[in-house]
Length: 216
Image (cartoon, rainbow, N blue to C red; front, top):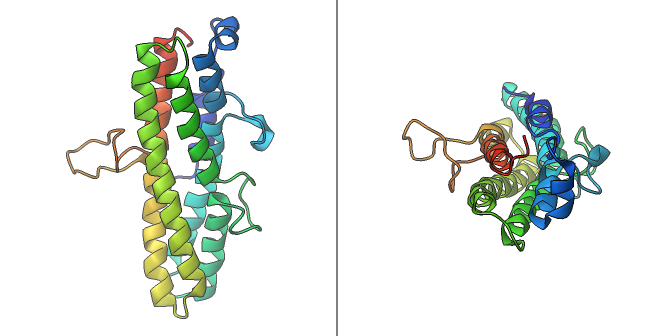
């Protein structure tokens, strides 16, 4: 069970424009990259949307693992899945250990702002290429998060531990896909494409985008 993704993301996607802060301020594409990586209004402590997604994913993955650990205890499963839901979307489950922003909202924000970066006037081919990769991975995270919300609501209504445990196991698999991606086509590697890329791949391609812009 991996629970350190949030910290890893915060380190991996640190300051956007360490080499030349003026670049990020002057370029519309770079400003949107900054929203993804560095800071965005309304996120916990003002972090970027991608680190915010990572922090919420860490909570969701931890509690999904705890829910799956006790398959015979309906109360435990439902309690921990409630915590997963809080991290995924606090408007669905208001109380819990999440950061209050929500994985789903953060991932949607990542997808939006990499698209805005790519569509910005003067955006380089480097930005456009990697924005497509990041956007695809963020889209997967959104899809998986929505599936978690669907399953989580069913877990909360389950009347037997067996029924709840089966869905909790799927939720655990989904949280791990969100964190690490998954080898959907079983070719021995995890790419950024549909059904494969997760937050790890989004981080990888944001860092490639930064490097291509001379920002690392």
